[in-house]
Length: 383
Ligand SMILES: Cc1ncc(COP(=O)(O)O)c(C=O)c1O
Image (tube, rainbow, N blue to C red; front, side):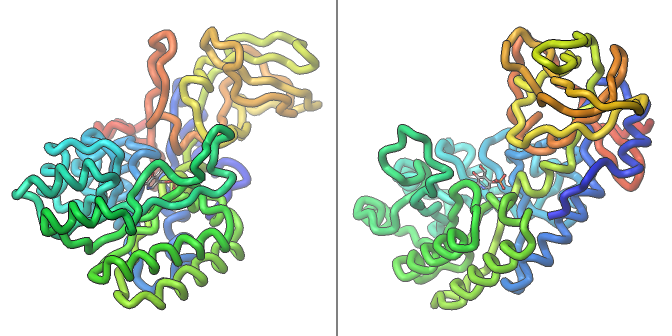
């Protein structure tokens, strides 16, 4: 992964006069990350890359992913529609809730559907219009870092146990043949975990010997932040998969890795309290609570650029929620009301899962591509 130390010159140029608030995604940064990931995955030989649309469904970002040759992974009718409109191909679908209609629509679109639970296998099997060759999502044990404190099972709530007798009864009743397997259980934090997941998929192929493809999911952000850990993990996974009798095609479907650091929030300072708890308290015209990103926002720049002695700043959002903070104790030169700030870390799981407290509209989305700014909504407005 390319971890940018700060904003590139193009990003600074195009955001300097952009009205705030706004979300800006840098497609050139996405392209660089995709190229690095392809390189990291070279131990597998040929790999199909799908973008997990749940991370960012901005139409122009999806257009950019399609232009980079990526397919898409979707989990709802909305995401499927967005992926199809952008021309992402091939497509995969997995979700704990899939209606019969969505199954049909996805199959018509040529998507690979991975059934998540027994109810879905039953609904699929009973529909004679659907293929008898199916994909299954495998249930996997969770790592401690992915478990909540009240989790008593230690297992992901998604996916199916290949040894489940009811599953095999359903497969034989409906004459279903499993040809594709899927595995995903949050962040893969280290090479050992990566290898355990690959071993699980290989073991499942002894139960489903007609497996043609395996989808190893996403969750690559932490791993790929460390070049050596990523190489070790992918080499070990590829070696483990080579032991499989089926020699399946390999698919990955990262979301956060491809976009997290390529997205920024531009927001305006609407209030400054000189000293609150030892820091200048800045209120912005956007909300950290509403945008709820999983990345930690980082201060990247201010417009105008401020110089001079640094002091701690707390950045609060524009809702009535007490804990609506973007970042605290950010040591930067003194900001004033009317300044605009650029915060990084808004590319993934921000707009795509935003809340709308007080009915405050989400910031409009913009995309930086080849040095120019275009609307996130495909109407191709240039600034
Ligand atoms: C099935 C599936 N695939 C891929 C992803 C993408 O994961 P990430 O954004 O961590 O790469 C997710 C995330 O929840 C997922 O549930």
